[in-house]
Image (tube, rainbow, N blue to C red; front, side, top):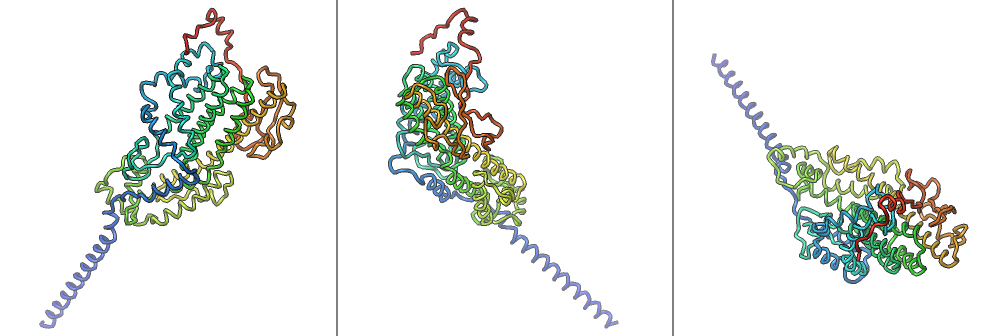
Length: 489
């Protein structure tokens, strides 16, 4: 009996010790789990990274000549004209009238500046022409760039207040594009009044505005700069189709093309800037200790207002235990740089296509962003090639103007008017096609080389012959005679 009781007591002791061991093991496991999970649950958003802003601004200044920055002059001018509200709300009505000829489709775009239907547009231009001299002053500075800031206060002259990251100066783009259109419309008026020195000066200003913005360090600025250049080039080609341009003005505009054109030149620095911005954008999704923050990444991805995490956000961040490290994220961005450059130059490889789906983030939605971004490099590269060809074609048209002014006739072939290197498409290396046609304005058509990749299904004519949607004679007949202008000046 005693032995049985002793054995039972021993058994209970063993069970108790086993239970204590199990409880201790569970407690140890839970403690280790809490210890491992704690950094992911308690991780907070990172502090400002002034080094990232400094690196992007250093890249922005790269290659700039010495001297005072013309942006300081432009910033003060835009601030005085309420640039942050797109040249001032009080000018909105006049702007609506002025931009109409550039809305596609618009029959007014196809008509002369003295068309009576443009009387209100001429009055609207008078509202804006006083804005151009300060712009020309700012464009005269050889050094010109808009520094990036964290606080987004691009028009402010005060020091930057470090915030969550690098702010893209989007409030700047609308005023600059509007100033480009104002300059182009003013070119049209000056040409109709025979003021060709003014036409050339306005062309220089429009090209400089576009070139200065496109040599910033980010893709969006480059694309907007290219759209601004397209407005200016389009207006010049329109004037070439309508007027005999005097030799001095043609030579001056040729020189402006040589100074401010060639959108290829900025591509390497542009891609470096995008990668630097991408790294800074991605770092904002990691804590200072390198923990990936799902809730912060989703806010960034959705361009939402950055806010503090909720308890659910913190618990959900346990997923980050298997997320890529910050070092791996930066490595992926560096790999993307080479692929982006080859995509831009239309030299994309199969390895690049595979790499384009590789994202610094462990999220399918964010992978889609990376894929879209890589495709944008390809689209931007095609735009660069097409615009490079259009720039070269515009230079060919100006050289044809010089030949016509000198000889009093149009050449039968391009080699009669210029050197072969001057009429080669710089993208394909093949000469532009030149064809004489029976047209009262400009008796020739200039075309891109057949099958040029940058056309992408677009018309190959580089100087489309302009035809009225409705002639002035028809308009005047329908409206009982010519309409009085109402006084432009």
